[in-house]
Length: 364
Image 1 (cartoon, rainbow, N blue to C red):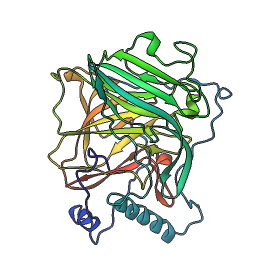
Image 2 (image 1 turned 90 degrees about the horizontal axis):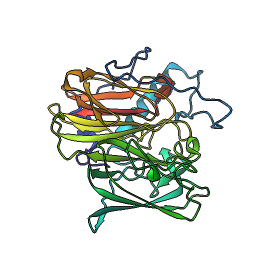
Image 3 (image 1 turned 30 degrees about the horizontal axis):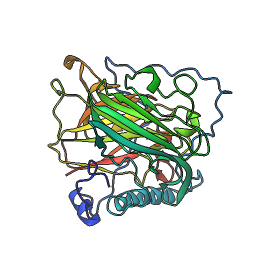
């Protein structure tokens, strides 16, 4: 489990006891109004898309055994089982495969070098559900890359897919030849072929890398990852104790958070006194207003650009549009297990309980 998400394994009994849940019933997410945090950095309106131009199956929910004819007892039992499975997942992962593992570069002549492969993989998003997916280095999301402004970096890419692809470094202000758009800035990387991107990192921020060929399929099947660019000087940044990266996706693999759907998502464990930097990234094709129970998120940057300190604002629901990155400082002052979920409720909850874009913050 990612060290940013869990500082060590937490025994299930101990987990429940710390959360005050032994002998108690977990509260579930409620409400039916979709609300979004407002502020100076308003999300852009969604673009108009010709429905005939993209052939993508409708999103799957990751929910199972959903039926409007379920009895009240069956509905309650489904919700309870989901919570129990989620708690088990925090000590013994319910699914195979771990994504977003940070990849340390090797350094040659002052250049930071990463080797990436594009792979056809079977990926388990929720227990027992294998999806025909695509990933970098056989994982979803792909390895997290981290550099500092001014670094010289090189990314060697080998295409093991059955079709061509490219990599676009989303949000990084590169020279044109490294933009990764087929037949605009480069030829496609054919199956079996390799390609090298090399550039000097120009701008800070929470950025992404992903396919830019047949992207409605390739990105939504998992060809995506985080590229974190640290500034040389963090003057003007808010203080924080640790960070988490949360990548949203939808459509072909269902609603996923860091490549998994509830109950296979990771909890975020923190102390009530801690400040956690959350780097939000939406690689999907839908809006996801993410709602935090029991705490607040202070928005301070969007798409890698710091907002003036006088424009930072607190909210408990943050709208993350497709392609956007949002940085916030999360605080949860009261101990307990707090639901954290998309407030488009059809992305998060069904008659048999939570699914998809749901996790929890464990303040202890």
